Image (tube, rainbow over the protein chains, first blue to last red):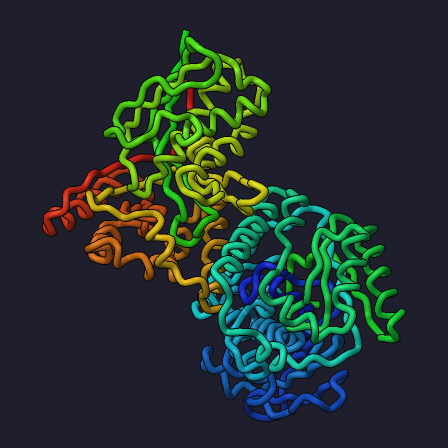
Length: 308
Length: 308
């Protein structure tokens, strides 16, 4: 018998936490199915929803490689396992598509093997998988996709990750405009140096955000959700970004910035009604500019990747 | 009848929170005495412990100017008030000497006037006073000196300050070597630009420190108490800094770095016995190098400036 897990999309950076903060959504996400395989080792037997863009070769597929690394760690690389990837979220959207696949694969395989590892200990294998897609070793999408909640990655190298309390009522609005932004380009555009002043503002804001989340202080969360470093450099990759941001703020967003490397844009608010109003206002801006977009409204997903 | 307040020394920056974090000590500190004055307006009538280095002119004295700004705000600038400053802490030590004087003055005057303002609302007047001494508008010493505890100044311009929980058992060891470091020089030595990588490490660490403080997670506090930006630039101003730091870490410090602009060095630990061992080890390094030093061991002062 096989089993199925759901691995959610996630929003990395969260305005003031470039490379160190991320949170998970309830949806969209990937479904990963694991069954007993017909031959030795891990094989990818089915991929849907990817438009033919994902490789079946285990070693070059995010989910495959993450699963392989986990199996090697367990000494079970010869176990016959069939892995199916059903992508139910967009690629290259800044919503952690590869992170979801990697998180889903390690969770599904671990469950299939009757949980030899704690969920938390699966993280490093999922990060190894995502590295295949992204080239960089970082967990700001994988950690929330796997573990759920709002996650701080204090240090990416050692995967020193911590869940931060999520205030009741905190809602995310995410809009994905149908334009292409390559993660590599979004990374390459960033200047290697910033001013000390920018860093002081960023450290004040990330600390303020953490305090605000612990204290359910929505005003402080709002004042802290600012990005003076990355957003100004990447905004030009997303036509109408500032108009969309302004529409979100006018409709009650606590803060609004780029999700991951973009082009998706996220906003946070303190209830689902505001989250919907914000989403409608953001979508109207894109529609007025003849840009198709897809809207996702979700509380913070506290559980991350789950067995279905 | 007059009254007396005690305003404590404080440690700014806390390794990973340059310009945005600080905490208060139980001692040393300043005593400020307020009495009914003989003539119109605020006058400084006595200064002790300052070696003749502090001006009696209200407008050019940190405590005087802070008090004056408070009195002007209250429309009481003609009230005859005599202010005495008894400095019981070193100048130019990196321990917030001018911040203590400013905090003490506004607290004492507010008490003398039967508390027209809440303590928190005194902060901006104390910052105005400290600006006289330092030239810069920042509250990372004044806020903890006045309010106590570990304080985040999310934004200095708007004085968006927040007290962060202090875990039981957290102790500070502070050593003041008798060498001179000018705050202006310590500021001038800093490069205006840093790498984005350094900023990512700093944001991860400050967020980790805040999470560690909320969760009383001493290991996480220790991993977060790192400064890859300011400390390497200022360490050369303090002979033997790295040897002292190493001695502190070997004797159980969670972290150890420069206090404010130096030359004082602080370490944090999880109990008073470790705090003493750390202090003795630090002092031995300075003694071996023929540098006189003064040691202060204290829990985090939770109350800040207090009426005696």
